[in-house]
Each structure stands twice: as structure tokens, then as C-alpha cells.
Image 1 (spheres, rainbow over the protein chains, first blue to last red):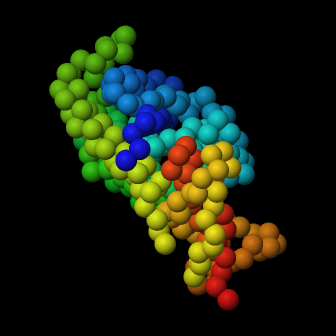
Image 2 (image 1 turned 90 degrees about the vertical axis):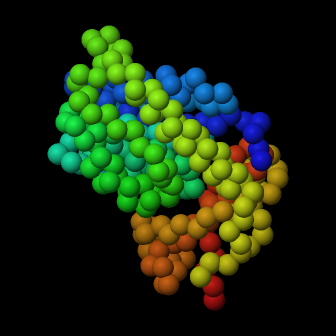
Length: 189
Length: 65
């Protein structure tokens, strides 16, 4: 198995809204992922990708985002739950690529103001991930009561999330490694 | 149904790439002249990844006669 090259797993902050609580979560998971040996990561803020809204799909591809996804072995998506759904801008961005996702791992960290940790947005995203060619892991990140999870400086106030995120990240890294091996060595023919 | 052709060669490393996936692209326009496979209703794209650098490239599958 090829282990020479580090696994690359970018974190995608999937909302552009002002006052977004998901930003603290994205920074937290990005920091935790950076601590892992043999893993490279990058925080991708979709607010910084100025996609047109009068067209869609590969016609409006952002070259920087496409290059990041092409290089990736896995994706970590941080998404808020808005009325049980995912942000339109996140879907708009994800739809701009296709072949870049094939047989790569994806884990979802969902963020909600209420007590269900964004479980409904995860369920809504799963079929989208599948159609894009991504392979979902069976651990999720569920961040409930997001406005009270961090202090004003963005410091996590509930340390139990560190332990739970550890399980999620281990699974995501394992799946990213296995799928890289598969992409490079296991033939469809 | 797609058929297998010669192995793709990585343009960066010069080594044989691994064909690990087929994906139907429904977005291609007919005037594109692409070989729409009637069995799938779209163009079958093959995904190939280089075992040396990890880069993935795609190419259109050839439709069976």
C-alpha cells in the first residue's frame, strides 16, 4: 500500500452566511485534523469562492476548488442545518465538479442551533454524496447548540467533542487511505 | 456497454494508470458529437488513477458496436 504521500483531506466550510456558527466548528475540526500524522489539510471557505449564480455545474467551475478536490483523498464537509436542509450555496459549489470526486471518502460534520446536531441535513446530503461518486463514512460529526459551543474567541467549551471527533477522523482517514489504494491499484476490469 | 481499451498512461509519470470507475455523464449535449450510449442514456466516462502520483484522469468509454 502506498503510504509515502500524505493523505490530503480538505475541510469545506459550507455556508456563506453572516454570523455562521459553523465557522467555529470548521476551524475546530481543521485544527484537530492537522494534528494527525501523515495527513495534510486545508480549510476551504465557500464564502471566498465567488461562483456566478446565473449558471451551474462545470460551466462555472472554480479552478482553485477543482484543483483542491482533484488532489484530495477525502473531504470533510462542515454544514449547518437550515430548515432541515443544506445551504444552497454548498450544493451550488459541489455541483461544479464531478470526476474529481470519484471513489473518494467524505465525512460530514453537521451544525445546528437545536439539539439534534444536524442529523437531518446529513440524511439529506447522503444521496447527493453518493451521486457525486463520493463514499460516505459511517461516523458523523454532530454539533448541537452551536451558538453556545464556543466562547467569543472561538474556543471549544465542551471537550467531549474532541473524543467524539477522534472516532470520526480515524474513520475518515482510514477510508481515505483505503480508497486511495483502490483507486490506484484495484482495477474495475 | 463500455469496453476496455489500452491502458491510459499518466502524462506526468509515464506509468500505466488504473481504471477504477465508470460514471455516466448525462450533461453532454448531442451536438457535442459524443458517443451517447443508449443503454445508459449518457456518455460513459472512465476514471483512471495513477499509482505513482495519485492523479486521476478520465476519458470517454467506447460504446460497444
